Length: 201
Image (cartoon, rainbow, N blue to C red; front, side):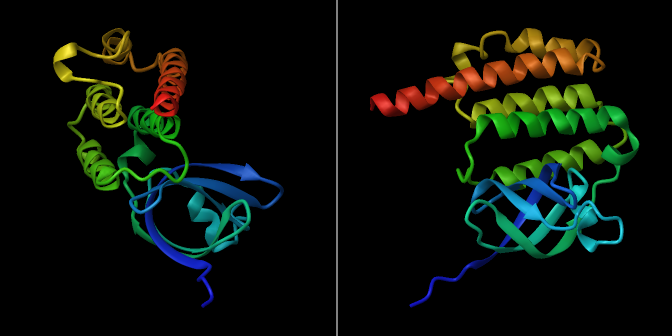
């Protein structure tokens, strides 16, 4: 019996990067497979319908063909385009930081049940004009890091340095470069420790 090389998945685009002359590699969080990276051929060409896949934060249904290294997008349907992260740069930076943490905290093809629905709910909250992006981000990062296993027990307190880094966002969201670098260093360190712990068991 032949194994199907086609699949369908709903996913939230976290970011995309140019690849070669015409294509993009798109990082997507899906419910079924967790974090995946897919190839959108022609997405750098203005006249190509794949160009929309260069937008971060949109919810998309993907039809994918299995490849040796990357799955390739054969078709897609946009399910939802959040507006605020396209009109409010603070909201965009908050979303991009959340996306970086997701990419750093989860390995490729590692599902996390319910996280896609959570991220969509969080984005709907961010869509509200009265939601302060800095407080939104502080709340979302706490939840993400707890889900990723960076809190052993809420009663034991936060990840080392967590409160200090969150206060940077609450005081001044424009300090994104410094805080995001610190975040990613901590995420990578925590991921190595978790992997080492799994290997010891």
